[in-house]
Image (cartoon, rainbow, N blue to C red):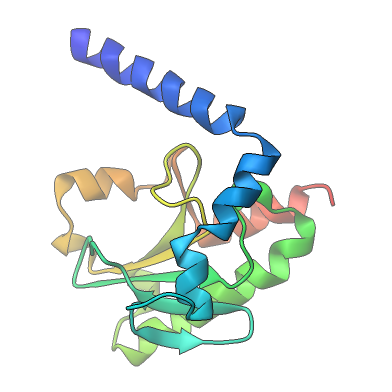
Length: 168
């Protein structure tokens, strides 16, 4: 019971910190974002970019949860999925399609992969990033929990449906 209470308190603190960050602080953060640096090749050594388009890049996760664990990040800075609206559906679809095509090029069936986004405050980096992970059987118990569809992780197709319903 004590541990559950501490976990709940930790969650409340994380949410409070995230929601209390001012717009100016978020702008300054985007100027110091290492994912932005990766996407624009501003700082080295960046990860190897497996895919690069005008809108996004795909690279291997630094701390892979399974044999194949890649991230697709937009070149434009967005803190998370929560910062997007209906106008961003096309971008998210293209990131999803790019990830699916890349996984196929790695002989991975995208239908068997985990493809989705963490939701604030459960994000490790404040820059929108789409995970592509395979095989789920390689994942530790903790990673299986972290990447299961829930209020902290949303599969890409569910994220797109949610964005379609958001206001501009």
